[in-house]
Length: 315
Image (cartoon, rainbow, N blue to C red; front, top):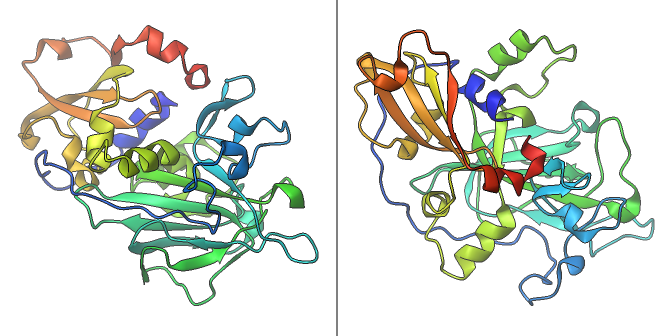
């Protein structure tokens, strides 16, 4: 997975970055009517497990296939049903933002019907993704602004290629970042047989954090916002990549730069990743840097073995 991220970042090069700055406060709201979390009730009251019945399988991280399968979101269970047993829970935006993508055709994605909202009111923009929806508010179109807590759709069980049973209808929620605006170039080079029907908002081009952990730390005032949250994460892996290009990722998320960049002189980058794959620190390297020694290829220069062993799904 880390290799996929590194390849993505060097597909585009545009304008000069801003410098590292502090995060603004941010508030998030719960996306469904279920009040179990706010009332302090256990996971089983608001998390939808997989067919295994193991409640942790609906959480974020290395929670499936005995810890070897990564789940990049959380699955929130239904508490409201109609006479046919279908979920009817309303789904709301977790924060104010702009709609960047809507997929209304359930068969076009493993996410089923899904919607992506970009939140840019803080110093670090992010995206939230709401998947498996039964329906999406028909009045919404790409470019619309939505408010925090605004209704966007109805929870469901839509997905491509496999059916989600009625009893396991849920909202799959992700929060994170878009890796590149040149995703199609990478997708074409990989030679995928299926068409990319979702442009830059294909799930392969999105990298997420643990919504529940972030939400709870915000509530407890342990972090101020996304930047603060990510700065507190341990470095799991550092790589050096030889490239004169500045990836478009840094145009969107310039706060991850470790220092001002002399862009015309850049010869490479040292990139630090969290265990869940977010590249949280980018250090520009120049031609005279010993880390870019002639003849050496792109390489891993650090890894936290103990940390990575705790999360075997990222092998």
